[in-house]
Image (cartoon, rainbow, N blue to C red; front, side, top):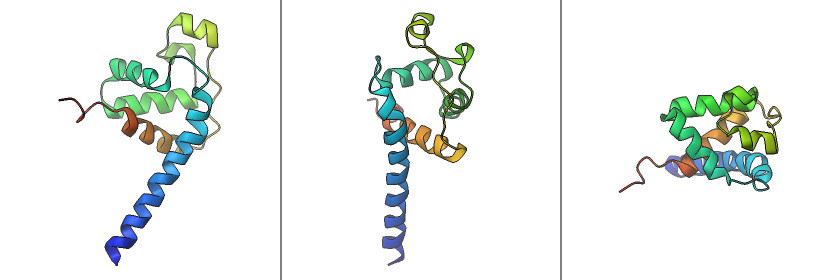
Length: 110
């Protein structure tokens, strides 16, 4: 019974995190090129570790600036800098965690 309750709670938590990501990140990013996975790979190339990458994304979402963007100048000239996220600290971390899990390459390469 305890295992079942823990499993249900874990699934609910994961679904809530995915909902924050889907409702706030994907909803906006689906209108842009490149696709959202390309942003992930740019961050990964620059920051390489999970912790550094997540911290960089969180920082950018809270304080977006051209100097901290991983996008090219041409991209920024065309689309501009995103607005500061309206998500709270916990929601931002949840969304970034879902983003990491969705696109991470570690453990998936053969």
